[in-house]
Length: 484
Ligand SMILES: *[C@@H]1O[C@H](CO)[C@@H](O)[C@H](O)[C@H]1NC(C)=O
Ligand SMILES: *[C@@H]1O[C@H](CO)[C@@H](O)[C@H](O)[C@H]1NC(C)=O
Ligand SMILES: *[C@@H]1O[C@H](CO)[C@@H](O)[C@H](O)[C@H]1NC(C)=O
Ligand SMILES: *[C@@H]1O[C@H](CO)[C@@H](O)[C@H](O)[C@H]1NC(C)=O
Ligand SMILES: *[C@@H]1O[C@H](CO)[C@@H](O)[C@H](O)[C@H]1NC(C)=O
Ligand SMILES: *[C@@H]1O[C@H](CO)[C@@H](O)[C@H](O)[C@H]1NC(C)=O
Ligand SMILES: *[C@@H]1O[C@H](CO)[C@@H](O)[C@H](O)[C@H]1NC(C)=O
Ligand SMILES: *[C@@H]1O[C@H](CO)[C@@H](O)[C@H](O)[C@H]1NC(C)=O
Ligand SMILES: *[C@@H]1O[C@H](CO)[C@@H](O)[C@H](O)[C@H]1NC(C)=O
Ligand SMILES: *[C@@H]1O[C@H](CO)[C@@H](O)[C@H](O)[C@H]1NC(C)=O
Ligand SMILES: *[C@@H]1O[C@H](CO)[C@@H](O)[C@H](O)[C@H]1NC(C)=O
Ligand SMILES: *[C@@H]1O[C@H](CO)[C@@H](O)[C@H](O)[C@H]1NC(C)=O
Image 1 (cartoon, rainbow, N blue to C red):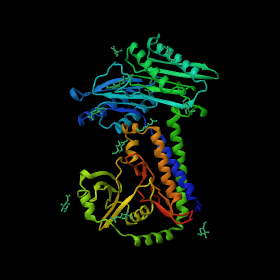
Image 2 (cartoon, rainbow, N blue to C red):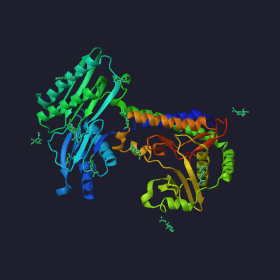
Image 3 (cartoon, rainbow, N blue to C red):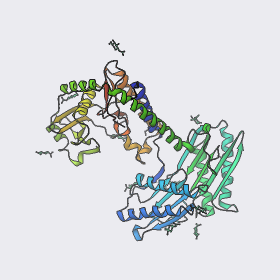
């Protein structure tokens, strides 16, 4: 049997780092969804459309089709970058369709750019029509590494992309696609332009010219960048990213190109480390389990409810649906108005919830003692019969996951906001770990447990899984694997 000693602080720092990573990289694929929605017959057509696109990807890198009749008709296309093999193209379309279903549920019109392909559909026929963007969405992505001679570099990039555009639109092949390689000091610039098939040469030309202007504006001094428009695509890097699609050299991937791949690698490594750490932690901790249980029992004795069930019922209109803010595995959250006019959020644990009396007690004991601007504030609680209720301060801006995983709301989180949210979470965790009399390991830190107040300050919530350390205790054990 393994008998390892795991330093809890080290362990939680890994956890914190991990969540910061997830937060910083939680930028999903590039997509636009219209906010008008479709009914179920169209949904049926949409599923068939995806199937049809997918099956055609085995023979062509571009396909346009329509499914259905009359008002339920849907038009769709996919475009894989020209260098992509038909197998990868098909994979990419599968991924795009899945992402569209997830990110744009029921949208009547949507565009999705993945690493190697675009999938787009609409209730309007857009055959051969040029459109750089759909309602202003033009996606750009940059490789964050900077070049040392930006002016010179920019002008060469401009010239190269200009030449390729001419080739793609008006060249002898006129196949709406061109790549080129140009030396720059000690490096080579690799560039690619492509229009979605069935555009006229003039439209292809203007689409790419707008994209070039965009890339020179947005991504000034970046070593590599790309623009993903609805009807055209361009990209440049200092490593070959097309053809045999070599993996980008290690020293050139600060952003963009290999980002998704690297993100996956990093997350995998961190996850594996976490799993190993957790395992060691659990095995070691099993030994001390009895002591922990005894302490829990002591805590149960101190507990005493202090808000009446009646006043909570009044505050939440008897837990009416209209007051419901959300639902989780643990139960539901309701908005309430206390008789003194205070807005609160009431967490009502479901009867079948895994959070039993023990977790409830942990949470109450804990939050009562913890006060910090990045930790959610408990106003009161109540246990009566089967009912277990928490009354928290009300957070008007919901939780972080609501912003991160919603394509429209995500835009409101610019980098300075993200940074301030990350620092806030870190301060909250620091308080838990070091600044209070107790040392608290949250063990379930995730975006849905980070609430946002009206100024978008983060507040850590949900201490049901937390573990408390007393005084200078620096190690502990547990028999149960919990949390995220
Ligand atoms: C869709 O969004 C536009 C602006 O983004 C807005 O003007 C319009 O009211 C929205 N429509 C619906 C049905 O929400
Ligand atoms: C392409 O899709 C159409 C339907 O839009 C279908 O009839 C055709 O068989 C597909 N082609 C291939 C090669 O699967
Ligand atoms: C892939 O596309 C090529 C033509 O580009 C075709 O010859 C080949 O049969 C396709 N492969 C499959 C598996 O359909
Ligand atoms: C699109 O392709 C069709 C043939 O597949 C052709 O008749 C039509 O003119 C093309 N449209 C444009 C804008 O190139
Ligand atoms: C993108 O769409 C928006 C809204 O329709 C429009 O104002 C803007 O000019 C478009 N941009 C380009 C480059 O076509
Ligand atoms: C790249 O340059 C931009 C502006 O010139 C600057 O804001 C940014 O910090 C630089 N990035 C790196 C990684 O040096
Ligand atoms: C890019 O090149 C075009 C000519 O192809 C030129 O008109 C334009 O001014 C150049 N833009 C920049 C920012 O260098
Ligand atoms: C809540 O329910 C109780 C009895 O079940 C009822 O007397 C009371 O009027 C209800 N209050 C509201 C606000 O619906
Ligand atoms: C209930 O207890 C909490 C935490 O100790 C306290 O902040 C709150 O004021 C109390 N509420 C009432 C109604 O006594
Ligand atoms: C980020 O968004 C906030 C609020 O909308 C705004 O005050 C701030 O200037 C933005 N920062 C940047 C760098 O755009
Ligand atoms: C956060 O909530 C406040 C108050 O309800 C609101 O004014 C603000 O617009 C919200 N911020 C965001 C980004 O939704
Ligand atoms: C914890 O503190 C006590 C005194 O408060 C001390 O006797 C004990 O050695 C400390 N234990 C550790 C592991 O530092």
